[in-house]
Image (cartoon, rainbow, N blue to C red; front, side, top):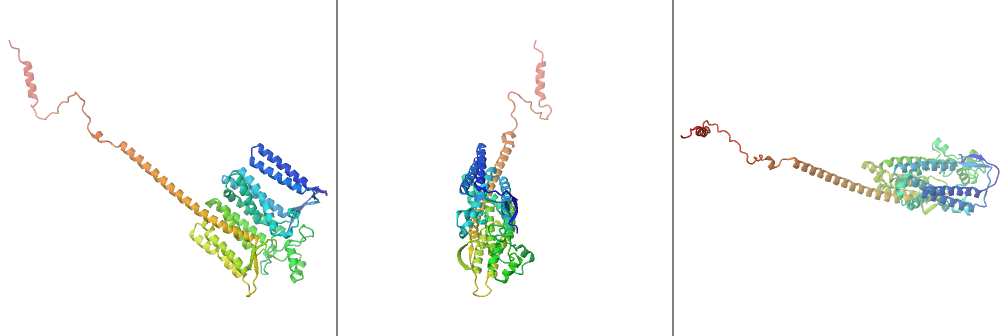
Length: 487
């Protein structure tokens, strides 16, 4: 593998480390001052925080000198930096789509990334205290020593504290941040593979040739790293199989025995989780849904991967129990958590039922795979740090997932009822308006009566149809008018 990608030639001069840290502090102060001048309060606070951290580090390293004729560029560091850049653009892009404040989210990402790195280091130190004898050993990060779950927990705490100071909710941010965690797994585990750490147990002899080739780690040249001579897998196998035929084969081939490339396994898991989360965004029902899904899925898969991990720097917790009892029992707990929690997100009832039944298969398969060949040959194990954290967090988020899902369903029912009620009221109002219009247009009884005759105006009677009835009086009058006057 390639723990060091290349080296940058530098002059053979001893440099004081505090100079570089002081320069970082000055740049951060300038950045913070400019941010305050632009009335960007949160950016200014971040700048001053970085300046304070750099200043404290410069004080502690004031007597340290750095001599490096050639500056090594480590593969893991490159992949870690690449994952931060990809996560930056992915997180801010999703935050912008969800309508979250861009500047606040950018500052939150910086805080989350810094606290996540600190958390991953703190958890590694806490689980491997025997390796550290002074503060300098703790602060010496060139030898490696990070735990993914420490980064997750630290990032979660940092995000919560920062968003609380800004009076913002955590879960909407968590939903846009977890895809970057999945992409981080995809990228950083490739760095682990190139570095050779986090390797797995020996592969069976019948394993495919390509898998054996992927799981073979070479012997590095002497002093390639401060951590020791040879890849971690090679060094461990040399200690375990010294004086055995396997040890002789190891020295002859100058590389480790074939092991499970668990780094590649987890990188593939990161790719799958990234696709799942981006697809699930289209079907999001409540805030925190993507976050809960990621925590549960990664916890369950990481629990399984820890079974084939072989590096010792993982810590152990809980009572020692028979492996074929402890592992299946924990997998049953995961299955129950999935059944009553996460599976509610599967809207198709038939698919949900199939998924619930299938969730218990890993426990059954693990029991038969880990059961001893002979009675009495029982291997006792304890949970690793990552297994314990994965189990506890998986159970917790399943409960919150189920609760949020039910609450979201009640909210949708209430909205539907309110919408129907409003629609009925609108229809009733429309019907009332139509009735009023019809009443206004319909003729009344008074409108149907004939119009009254004008007063003082006589109308001629209709002719009766009989001749001579009205002519006689008229003739008499005419005769009176024509009579001669008396003499």
